[in-house]
Image (cartoon, rainbow, N blue to C red; front, side):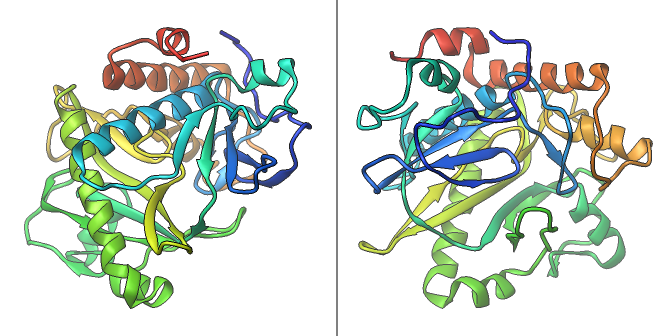
Length: 313
């Protein structure tokens, strides 16, 4: 496995549709699917760091594939955009060198219209939710029980959406009522019910393996021909979720995380929060990489190297 971070995707055989903070989207010839390619870029506080985390894109891709399978087995009639790992056989124009580069970090997905919100679900009061709760005993404007402590489990998971900002802009926390005005009455409750079910199923699976999912971000799309709502993008990864060790969990303090919190803490403590063109030192890169590899192992029961070996050719 490569020790170099892949921050630029050298794929020229397919037209590039867009480039996000972490993923590049390409258009296969069929015009009904997309090829999602996950780089090793990493962002924090809505800013992309100059250097990346080696193998991070592989962790995100293989863990998403795992959770699409887990959620499908636990939620009847769940629809999601994932079709297969790697480019489909229809993408015959891809070169052998490009296929090697794409292995483990790409997936073929259905092409859908994406809802312009981030569908966040919180099971614990932490991060920006804790900051708001301290001030007003609300989370995204939703009243919460009095007397909660930092990182305490909520009585029930709650749906706390945000806006979906353009690249370089900041997402803004909004209430479910505000989200309804964006996606429309027809879809608001379907989205909320779906992401709450996905969080509960994913959190139960993770807890069985010693990991607490404190909160996570989902994205949803719509098939305009069938009107079906689909789970899209990545799902339950250390980029989109807060992962804590169940054995080390303790109410009333910040938790040691298997996610981007290591990077956020370094940025904040060095006065670099939200600043552009920041390069991580090698020790931060290695610490973040180790956390991603460890949570992958705990959640899948295999090392990343084993996961790559077990991929169907």
